[in-house]
Image (cartoon, rainbow, N blue to C red; front, side, top):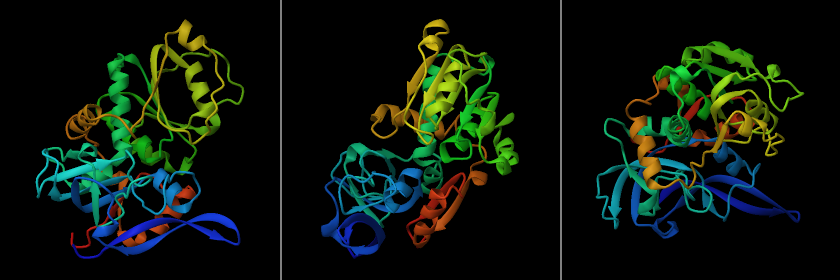
Amino acid sequence: MTPFKALLIEEVTTEGRRGIKSGFVTLNEGNLDAGDVLIRVDYSSVNYKDALAATGKGRIVKRFPCVGGIDLAGTVVESAAPRFAPGDKVIATSYDLGVAHHGGYAEYALVPGGWVLPMPEGMDAREAMAIGTAGLTAAMAINRMEDNGLKPESGPVLVTGATGGVGSLAIDMLAGRGYEVVALSGKADQADWLRHLGAARVMARSEVPADIKPLDKGLWAGAVDSVGGSTLAWIASTTKPQGVITSIGLAGGTDLNTTVMPFVLRGVALIGIDSGYAGFAVRERAWARLATDLRPRHLADVVREVPFEALPEVFEQLMSDRAHGRTVVRINSEL
């Protein structure tokens, strides 16, 4: 194998203080982590978690040095896993990628076969990474809500963090399934874009009251919440009887100050969505739907593509809240 380019995250000490830096380096076969599927990476993506890891603004990386990137899609070069053969198109997302195992921000990745899924029929590497962990999370949330009885006729579904990767894809998918979607966002200038994706209504973040009642008027049949904190407490108090809330993020905080009243008086379900270590069957089901009935209708309007070398700039945009939708990274310069 010839030397290859990677974005490496390292721990450094400056004037007695520990910090984190990331930058492009050249690696070789001896730098690969343990695994049984060698993949030529074609595309990766940028998630908020990736930006936190690369900038050191979140305690994300578990071992140093580590190649960043929790998502990757590409072509199998070599495989000791019986499910895969050279030439197969594959996807790998989450698990320890980009945090404790070299991830997708490299031209080659060697990963355990249990982390790898076949590319769904009719999908390519770029589309898979446009969807990525964000779309996988949204699809898993929709699966769990529908498993718990949610239907379009049940009533409105709230999506918070609406301009983010998960939120924007969730709006598109839910609207495509016939749901009435209400988008909650702090970015007033993106309201028209959210309506274009399928939101029937856009709520301003300022509409969420500071004084949250234990049990308020029931508004939502379901919710996909990436904010947490007081926003999630308000959602719980305003969810309709037998409604279902999926919690997928904590952008607004980790504390949850609520009461049992929505759960014992209305039968509200609060379900956590973990796309990091979800098993193979859960992922396979979600990806199968992402290639069929949950396939985002406006993916071209949600995603932008950047070259590998633009990653540092994208990280800064995400951390300063100047980005929306999804960012795909073209790792293979020959594409």
